[in-house]
Length: 204
Image 1: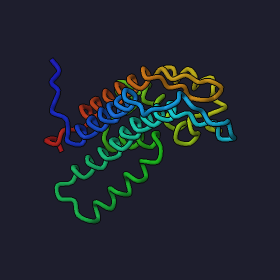
Image 2: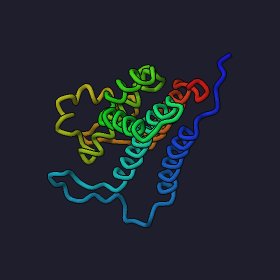
Image 3: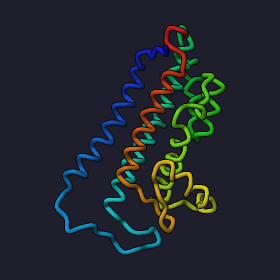
Image 4: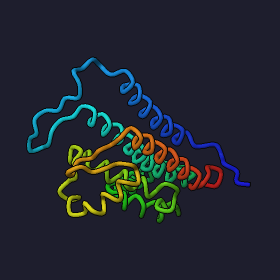
């Protein structure tokens, strides 16, 4: 029988942030402001603005960003806990270590393997989270379209995005409400799995 321990405070915070993000999105969808229909502005070099698509993109971007912030915060928490009485110098070293491992997700994976003996890529739902990270990059750096860096990988990304239920249409993301719900479930389960995989405070 597998015994699950009580989640850390930071884990509970991340889970609450994730649920609140999705719930607020659903509340806005359920009670939309009066409008004349789905309005799209004229297409420009940056694409066109679609309010519904922007709201869906914003929700998914926030979900992935919460997981990213949680992973970085947890790494810092674990490093500080490794010292019985961390002083100013030790904290500066920890700050530097976390900073150097928080630029990309590959750096996060390497850091967790080396510093915490946890393989992020082996945790449940990692493959789908990794797809969400690519979607997030399209939102953050391409305004909902594939970035120049991503475009040569369109065939691979089409399949990868499909893990979340996200489609591509002429290089633009198509995110359904079902995909957002799946994204929430992926983020929740990954955060919970990571919390259970790291050392307990009693074992420091």
